[in-house]
Amino acid sequence: MVRAADTDRLGLAPQAARLWAISAGLSHNHTNDHEMLEIGKKIYDALYSWARYKQEEKHTWQHKK
Image 1 (cartoon, rainbow, N blue to C red):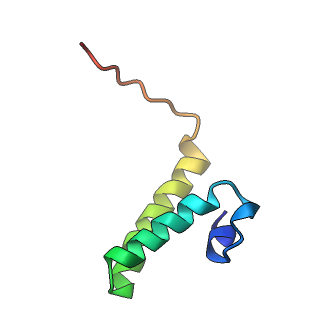
Image 2: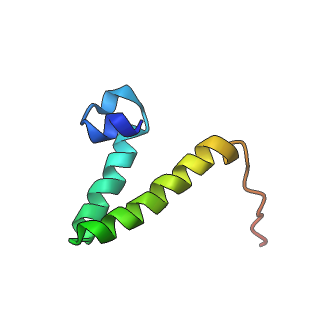
């Protein structure tokens, strides 16, 4: 998925376009590469943790009327 986003081969993984969108948005919002990298690493780490450990977890919060 990350390789597909990084190499502009978005067809390799359905999620690749979303990762590319996150990276492109970060690049647009942060001109400092080091700042962008630090923020991007946190986002990618969170996505990895979800995919590895939490993707079966469901929202249990219920809106009360």
